[in-house]
Amino acid sequence: MKKELLFYNQIEFESIKTLFKSLEYEVISLSYFLDDLKDLNKFTPYKSGVCVIDVSILGGGYYNTGAIQAIGENVFRIFTNEEIIYICDNRHHDQLKYELRYCFEQFIDIKEKYDIFFEQLPSPIIATDRIHKKITDFTTEEFEAFFKSFRKSLYGHEKFKDDFYEIAKSFRLFNKIGEHKVLSLFLLGESGVGKTEVARALYKCLGGEENLAKVNFGNYSNEFSLSSLIGSARGYIGSDDGEIFIRVRNTDVGVILIDEFEKSNATLFNFFLDVLESGKMVSSQAVEIDINGFIIIFTSNITKEEFPSRISPELRSRFDYKGHFTRLSNQDKRKYVEYRIGSIIRKYNEHYKESLGKDVVNYFVTNIPVDKYENMRDINKRIKIEFVKYIEKAKPIQHRVNILSSIFKIDT
Image 1 (tube, rainbow, N blue to C red):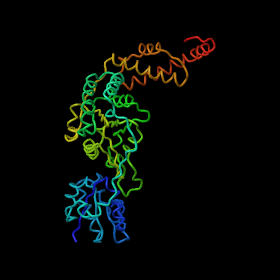
Image 2: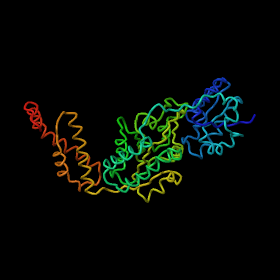
Image 3: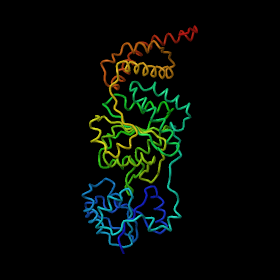
Image 4: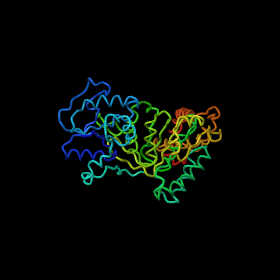
């Protein structure tokens, strides 16, 4: 009997488990047998005579390409039972077909082997219960109103706003006819120039009320990055959905922010190649989330010169827009201070039942020296510090004014 490695589609995994269970086979990850695939002394023998072993762990980015062949040859020599069936996620087809060429004689699609049973399989699980607000759902009038608000919410970067407007119009059209699934923006430039603010402005203008779906790839630089992002490999304890699925489920807006994208690795780059093409994300649990109509914003602190060498050509070609953000002018910084203070005052008045007026906005615009700051985060910190100082001095007086106003009906 020829030793075969059968490849399956990730979103069909749960259905495949159901299939083999009906045939009285148990599906187990290769990691069950060996905590460390390089240490054969820790091999855990399997009691039953029949099982299905999922070897996807070998192609999941956990092992260097050069080591997979040696590990595979040593590991599969241990399994001598001819009733064992070997399966693998088809995302690793090309890699494992080559690396395990001396371990298996055939590499085929699982449907070719069990075509009769597949006709009775349940449909893949698709998570569509959450409704997200997206620009593709707007009428033309709503889209124009949205963009007018977006222009006001993002200070500076006028060329980007003009470019984005045209790209967004094109995206809406081609998305409706099924030609463009996800709108992707890659924004590079030094820290604090407003890249992340684009995502926040989009979230606000789309009417977000919960959380922006944000993932910082500064935390995704090691070899286990993919399992952290989409869930750990099957067979591991705690193989739940990863961070990006949790973030998307917890947001009410079709915007995803991927910060510090360049700090990731090739495995995650490849993951987004498929996401941008298909408009779908598949978790380790084979749960599919449809992000058709979403906007994904990738930010990076790399320079324009570094961009070609840090990001693969395949991925670069997938980005719908690649833009470089420069520092804001002093005029734009003052406009930002005006906008930010106005926003803080509105929230403060609502929370504390106060009535700070527009004159307070002018005070901050005049007294915060924006020319001394290049980083917008530093300006924001200064705004908060100065606002607290202002309230500490003004609140006792304002409180007395409010009391008098309530007694004498004085319009303050």
